[in-house]
Length: 185
Image 1 (cartoon, one colour):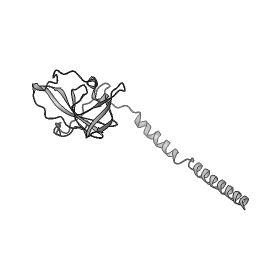
Image 2 (tube, rainbow, N blue to C red):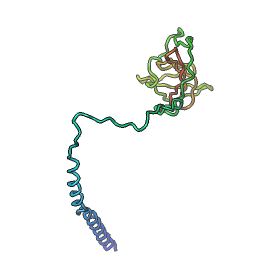
Image 3 (cartoon, rainbow, N blue to C red):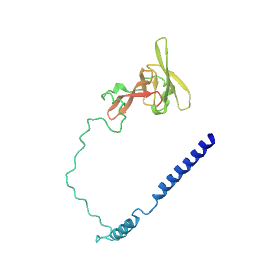
Image 4 (cartoon, one colour):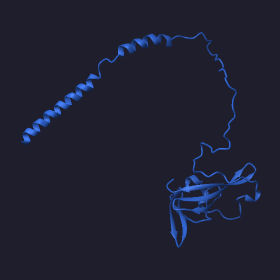
């Protein structure tokens, strides 16, 4: 019984293989390639013609409408990640100068995009962030700690992100900018 079944399945497999090969090879016959070659030969002559224009001169494009100014200055920039918070209102405060006489903390030596949030800890109701510097050292930070080259100060810590305010130079003084360091970025 099993020998008969084996012979039938082998015969069926050969029949299926033959059908597949015939189907695939039938696609290789001439499918109008002669018509395509004739069309290309006729159209090719038009492609090789040279216009009567003087070499080196380009005719200016005709403007159909006057140029329009950019109308979306008040909207979010398409080049900023949608989750990026906007800059805090810029004010001309000369007392915002970030040099407040304190010594710099270790993570202020690095740009914010060089630092990675690798985790958070909550102990006795206080949450702290674990941030890795470019050298691979992990630092434990809390609210009020400083990080980033733009005088960043941590204002909030959640399970997946650290919120901070950076003080950056502007044309007329200093402004504060909200930034976020996200777990896994």
